[in-house]
Image 1 (cartoon, rainbow, N blue to C red):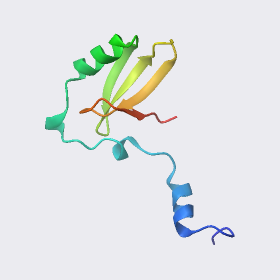
Image 2: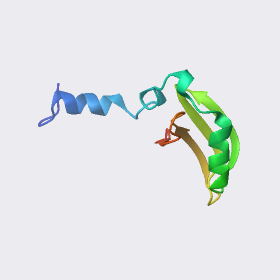
Image 3: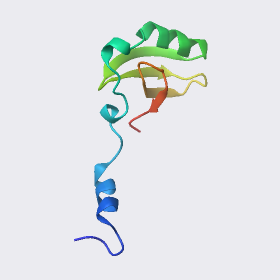
Length: 87
């Protein structure tokens, strides 16, 4: 039963939860740039990289940003665009 005034789409959105990595990155593997390039770009911005792994089509970076804040962020493997985190 729907809440008063709610639509089916609204209810489905609420149930879907956060965007998953699989919904963020879908570039074919042969188009990916080397992970070393991503590390170099982030380190050039003052980041400290602890680890980078591949997760559902994205690079998932663990480390600290330029302000020393702990980060766990997904990056598009082609554009290196910040695709957000699971937080």
